[in-house]
Image 1 (cartoon, rainbow, N blue to C red):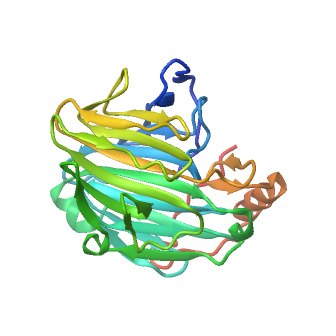
Image 2 (tube, rainbow, N blue to C red):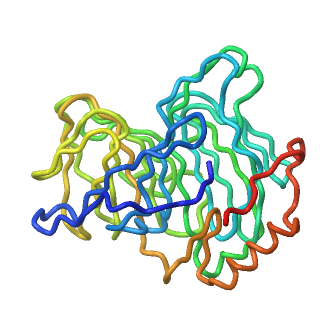
Length: 305
């Protein structure tokens, strides 16, 4: 799902809490028929490691005849990462990819020098109605890879490693954490983990990555003196040992990695270390120079003002 990021003053540093650097609350955004919770970018933090955008889609329930229709739109300088807890999204892109994503799978699309994609509910699910609950993240690419060839890869749930750590089932979706490494191809050091925490469980968080954050997908957790429920992200202090405790059954996503190599500019669906490059991408989309999406050529999202 790609939309114009915006920032509200909904977060603040927590200098008095040793385990936490800041707390970020998701802001509700209506995307025309369904609601997302936007977490990144935020005033307290623009990025966590290389992660520059974080949306929680849903949970929503579409009635028969309804679904999502994210029309073809462009990206540069980033990778989109889609992961679902419920429902299905059909991905198409200008490389010719046509891939449904279902719960537990990872869709990793590297935009590089430029790609166009769409995301829609299938005709079959549109007839019956369907749920949707999931996360979409953007990863800013390192400078040396910002203009790489675009690429799309689908990783089925069965190929992603999982383990039980201190009573918590963790799945390593990308990068390395908790002694396990995902097969997902990344271009920078990072980690992305889905954790199902039973009530009362405690999970010490890995500290090999400089920047780390925990987002509560559902339930309630504690970290130090801070409590967090669905829609809240706890940004951990660099190098500080941190342990999460599940107040009730909880689902938590962990992200982080090495800091990105320099400032990134962001406009609409474009991320780059160069403002001039973003301006070029704006002109290219406005003037129709991006490629079309095979099988979804009739519609597109216009460049916002």
